[in-house]
Amino acid sequence: MCEIQIRLLRDSIDAGAVLASVHDARCGAQMLFLGCTRETTGDRLTTLLTYEAYEAMATEVLQEIAATAAARWPLYFLTVHHRLGVVAAGEASVAVAASSPHRAPVMEALPWLLDSLKSQVPIWKQEQFYDGSTEWIHQ
Amino acid sequence: MCEIQIRLLRDSIDAGAVLASVHDARCGAQMLFLGCTRETTGDRLTTLLTYEAYEAMATEVLQEIAATAAARWPLYFLTVHHRLGVVAAGEASVAVAASSPHRAPVMEALPWLLDSLKSQVPIWKQEQFYDGSTEWIHQ
Amino acid sequence: MQLPILLFAGAKQIANADQILIDVHEPITAGEVLEKIADSMPELRGLASHSRLAVNGRYVTSQTIVDGNAELALIPPVSGG
Amino acid sequence: MQLPILLFAGAKQIANADQILIDVHEPITAGEVLEKIADSMPELRGLASHSRLAVNGRYVTSQTIVDGNAELALIPPVSGG
Image 1 (cartoon, rainbow over the protein chains, first blue to last red):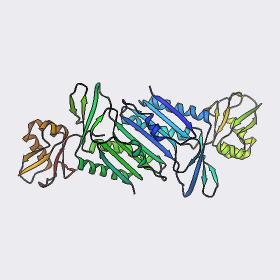
Image 2: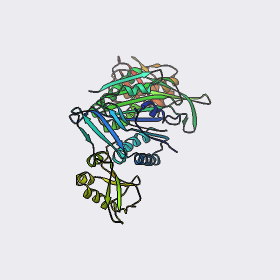
Image 3: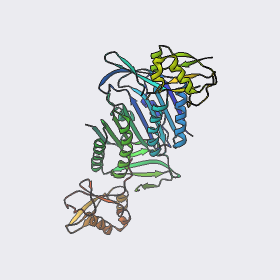
């Protein structure tokens, strides 16, 4: 039985807390992925990003993705934190962590979770560039 | 150019420091794998493990593995910390972290690094069971 | 009848509103709802053609018959993570 | 001549020593060194048959000619991580 924790939050992501949330003495493998906003998109400099979600649906879709992963791999703990609102360049916008007795399940599950999150969860980012212009990313 | 940090250490692994060591504003993807000793091996309860290394060679082989990974994937930072000596069950024995502008390289590199470490680096673990018996693991 | 459609991100920006109302006759499919959205606000047509419809927080296929009492949302291509 | 061979983990435990000396005639290959280790301490034969030889901190193939002045180590199957 996998313990799943899903959070959409407007504060900074606490990577240590996300990692700690999957700690378990039975789990020899614990893995954390941190997705951070970058200063450059192509050759344009980004100053900050704004994330917007259809919150109720985003939480539900993340739960479904997590439950699917937990059914497919023997994960004991699985945590997904995603930031909403303004995120400065260089800060974490998403953290995903998982634990399992052995390493193969977490190493397979994390890429699958990120791919699913990025293609399915109704969250959008808007980039703001140094010239002040903004752009919603829809691709 | 990838910045590589390799450490064999007798103190606890500081997972937060390992993760922080790969932080970079250009890197949208940062990933940490934590390998922890487990309380059970098969159906036997392990109380503690002892890691021994051929230290000079272990450091050199880890450097080579890291350099190979950095040549194969566009990694900006790559850190490997491995504990030696006595490690209680549930504690981290190894931490590997990497960062890259995008997520595919770190997600591919970390499993490869762990596989290489586990098959190539001259480090051995001895398990001590609750009945006091010990066993060097050579498989 | 009139159906409210929730808008997000670029769609909300284009419409300058967080929802729009479309006039429909039931029964209507999700694909027809997306077409009605584009008809009612031509500036949205480009984005709507790449969007999915969510009904009560779930993606539906374009053939799905839409319940007029459900919460409907236009979901443009997502970019979280 | 006599070559010292560093021992680790289970091999060190079996030999009750962190190195052993083997008598060899040069030139000698790494495979022959491993064979000599097993001959000089039969209790090590089982583990040595699954071990690699390291020369100056590098794995070598069994055909490699071993430099008698190099640091030699018996590397049983590793279990780090």
